[in-house]
Length: 471
Ligand SMILES: Cc1cc2nc3c(=O)[nH]c(=O)nc-3n(C[C@H](O)[C@H](O)[C@H](O)COP(=O)(O)OP(=O)(O)OC[C@H]3O[C@@H](n4cnc5c(N)ncnc54)[C@H](O)[C@@H]3O)c2cc1C
Image 1 (cartoon, helix red, strand yellow):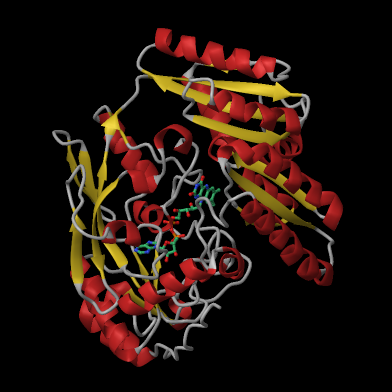
Image 2 (cartoon, helix red, strand yellow; image 1 turned 60 degrees about the vertical axis):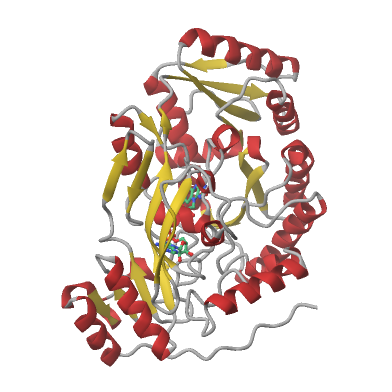
């Protein structure tokens, strides 16, 4: 049986605490009460809002450590905050407390071209970082859909994204961390090392811990040489089942796609209306969007032609090739803004369950059937290539609160139960935060949850770091 964690009584942070914290970090970096912008009361999940008591914008590791030490002594919650693009309420101060934003810790400290590693502060914006390394002919592969997120937020959630099929996720690129622990101690874990077998991996424990075990203040990541060429294929199919059914065939075709995304036309139509733009093709019921990269067009032609043949043999209606930078950029930009577009037709709740990649057809077909079962729109699209579906449950304008409150948990539970049955997990990349916690506690495995709770209470006995999140 799962042991319920002891109820920890946290203190509210007061105006007096704000004054004391000003003495630690400087007056201009501390906000209290109604001087805190509403942006900090929510993340991109945006269902419930909750303001922190105090918002702090430190510039250095020492300032972060001083604030956390102060909070620990007084048992005040601490909520680490990147850009707030998270999708599970992870960076929201649902129990009040001190929110520490990384907005001023935004420097790229070093790009070491000799050992292909870079050192950054946590508040560096992903797209800025990618641009800087690309200027040097280098490549940082993690590519979550929201590029205005911070690298620190990406590490804290182990963000995935489109290129995970070929290149893996954020965890695969982190080489070292500097972390402020819940008692205010600062520790350096690993560093510019290609590998390490030295004891338990505290680094991997911190990656994906969603601000519940410590505050990340510095990150060392590995880089790759930048592939010189890219080609994308947009592949229309006569049904969602056919599109998804082609994915395992592409995966085993030795063509090494960088990304395989799937989408349904309903979503494309919503996007076209919301953005006032035309998608290159929007008459087939479902699509795969694939990308390949390499160092020469000859090398790429061989693989994308093979992948096109595999798709056509699996029932594709056509294969559209996008080989110019502009055409590819517009396709992938569209894919990245689907969520924004869907929000124009109502409230959107999102599950990002992950299943073994070869079982994705069964999982997507099941999720698709939930629309009829529950009488709400359930639309899936996402990272077909790595088994990570993004399942959107829509509360269209006009749906009564009462119906939504009953239906949403029932749909969510069906999704996570099915993923569990297929050997999957509650979240493939967005994290657990607060929104997915109840499903994680149900489907995450009793022994594993109990272990996680023990780890949490060992590192953070007063439970100040991001309380109410994950476990
Ligand atoms: C349109 C859209 C598309 C998206 N697509 C993807 C996708 O493809 N793949 C994907 O993985 N995610 C995706 N996301 C989710 C989101 O962008 C990621 O979760 C991202 O990693 C969050 O970064 P952030 O800087 O906004 O962090 P925040 O939202 O501010 O925080 C996220 C979590 O990390 C913790 N945290 C932040 N900084 C630190 C720190 N320095 N130390 C310790 N803990 C910290 C917070 O407490 C919180 O728990 C998408 C979001 C949107 C809106």
